[in-house]
Image (cartoon, rainbow, N blue to C red; front, side, top):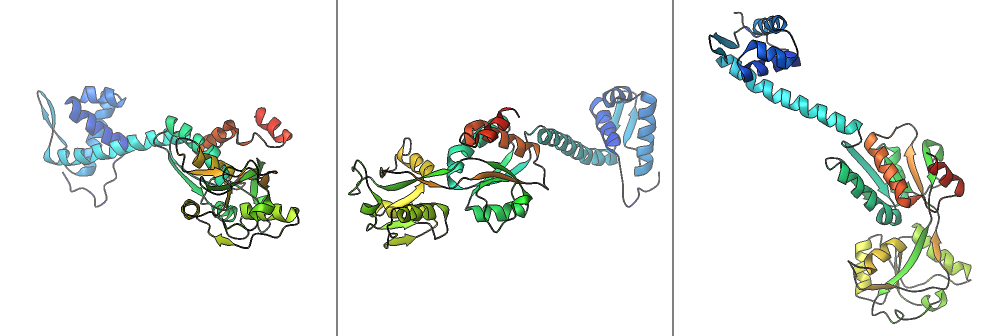
Length: 324
């Protein structure tokens, strides 16, 4: 036979037939396994051998055995067929919301309270799904979302962003907890006032961070100037290390504080009871209008909503969710 072309293009059906012939040694059995008649299989094999320029099987009385070239083709064919089968399975998983990749982001409170549970539920049903969660300030989250680098976020809407770019679902606000180490001088106080705390050392996020701004607003509402002894750090890990070694006070998301204080962590911190709650403005579930959610992202979003993230949302939003 002639030499094979410089670029050999075999169809999946040809590769499967070669594989089935090698498995059974019989053209009739191979044809049945490939879902075709024996004459059709015979024609396909002859065309394949013509394309390759060499016989692929020895025709013997006891059956068909691969030639040297047939063995080489068969080795590659099995790899390709295996990859195609894997691709088909992966596509089915993606279409069912059980596979693929999703990247989401959140501010600290909802990340701790809701996202962990929602991600675990999805992973139980879809262990091969690749889920990435970033905990960042709202400004960073919105930049990532607009760049198409995240599927959806739990964040606050900031004035420098055009809200018409987003699908917007109003959710909850966040409570601020004032956390200290267990041996802090005020740790056992039945209640503390902001006036008492004004002269203490604090460690806070940078100016402009919602939790810090809410804390400073609480001081201002009482006619008090903000604390003057402040360490600034956006790092939660550094904040905890600083608290553990000092009598500083840190305003943190109530959800983070509960995680650290309660079992199983019980990390050696307590929260100071205050006369009035300090709350941060409402956050929202946001995704891009121009970018429909994948089945996996949609499934994660549904689990998030079912887990109670919208529990304190406005009544009309809760009614809408209940009827979805």
